[in-house]
Length: 104
Image (cartoon, rainbow, N blue to C red; front, side, top):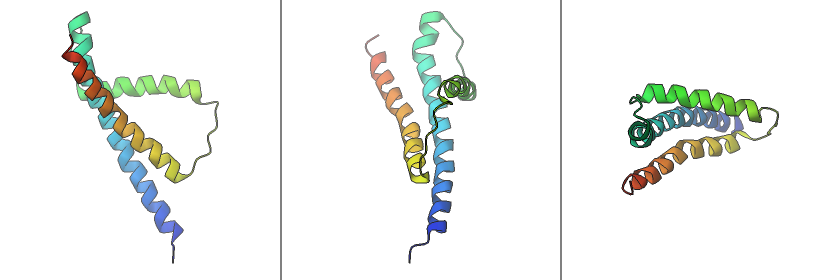
């Protein structure tokens, strides 16, 4: 027999785990891209992963303000899919940035 309450608890747990993973991958990707492109061009200081997470959160706060008027009705599974995408997309961007550094 299918137990929906067990499934939703697991989905909430996975959303929590992948949210943390997304924050860490955004911070790591942001700090490396900053190091590769901003530091050499603008002679800016190198930032840590924690500082990059803070800057990413600030940028996302501004983006949230732009999109807060739209109400999206999603299931927990849909939210999990979106969060997994958020956790993976910075790694793809980092990979593209890594290849771009060879062109510089």
